[in-house]
Length: 178
Image (cartoon, rainbow, N blue to C red):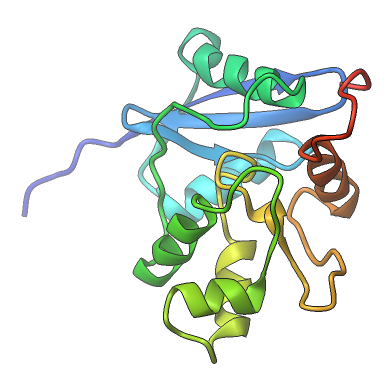
């Protein structure tokens, strides 16, 4: 058995007028967006679980293109992200995350609709769990998934952030607050 070289995961703190989030990327693309105002420990826990052999290395320059696109999104100047993502999860999670990536800007789907789109209509709870495990919130827009009654439900970034992101994507909203 060959020894595998440890993978380097690069990280940087993204700071905008409203949010402070750690971002991580591998050589393949963005792999993690942290929750607002959390410490580096959240990122370390994620890498320990998903990439246990990874070496964390701060690299502001490498993460700059990701930061720029997020900044443009928060200012209402971007609806889609062009950078690559490097998703680490189960096969089921990746299928769910792929569907999330197709939810149009400014629209919301229910957990049931996502379950229907993956052809597993009875797997609503499993879909919700996969959405909750989304490591790349915002670019993989899990904030666009709501309860069947229209209520906002769990979001790793917190319900305040989810509400702010949905408000940001409403065409009639102004983005001056960002």
